[in-house]
Image (cartoon, rainbow, N blue to C red; front, side, top):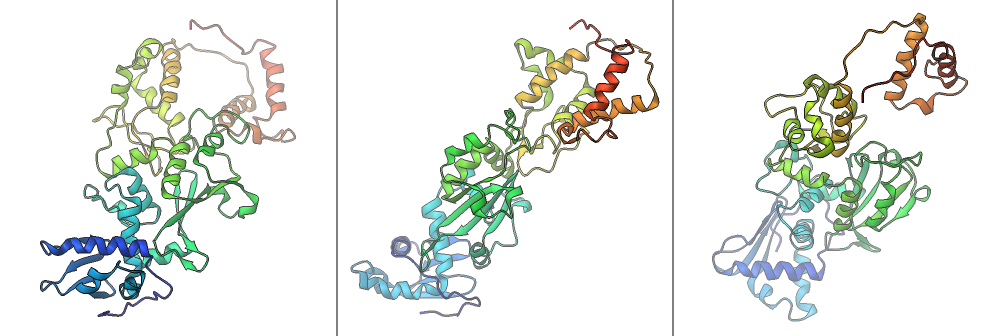
Length: 412
């Protein structure tokens, strides 16, 4: 019996037999104490006090099923017809419960939290209370409507699309989700123009080299190649693929959502270094500002820096806007810090150079072009750019050959 008709169109939704069986098995367990056996995403199921029926309540409709019908259901395929039809008005809530509690499972895990984030669902983790995890699409019907056309989220340079799985004749009746991943720059590309993948292990090759074939030592650098997509992924395969492309980002994001991200600040990291990296704790305090500006901003790394010089001494450099946090100085930063710690130990000297004003400005242009990674973009014919190869070669021929400036021996 349906007490209230839903306000939204639910035609075409159904509950698959396996979902029905799981639901009936669960609500039968409410016999003992009368407490709701299901209270999930707006869907509440409980046995009436007199024991005559089961009440299945959602924000848009309430369904009551006779206790005798529930008891008999499963005895034969025909015995499931009545409860199956009765559930149609609330099918999205029933299948939503099934997919999260039976298919995904793993409450309070990073995997489950990430999958819920992918479709804009509130994180159903009691330890997560931040407003950032809540979305406007928390209602199941609104979320299902969005999943029909695809919910798109961005994770670094990844565009992740979540959809409801469909059979040829309509919805699967299980609430199953399927996922696609592609590069954000390929958002408008047709599938036919992209290299198709469906095995998460394929991501290992994709993340290894950049567009110019150079090895990518930092997997969160914004240099992920384009031209590929993973389609038809299950939730587990989606998580595995993202973990391969951006290692540890899901786990650290989830720890941050739960408020237990364990951050190691610079001093802690520097003081525990040994061997050739023991020297990094000698890096001057002000040099750490330059280091983070060089390595840890959005143009160089997609993580959002959460570590500081010390817990009570922040670094002024912008932390970045990344979705996932950076909890400690990475190995690339430590390696670079070793070099800069050595360089900063040198004594400063006063130099006298014979340069024109344009030549002095050109030096700045060359440094900026290298630092911004745009040397390869400067055309050979663009001699108005100070970092142009011919301009640089001219300056070298003129000023290095006559000894105005050149390489100077250092102590280290």
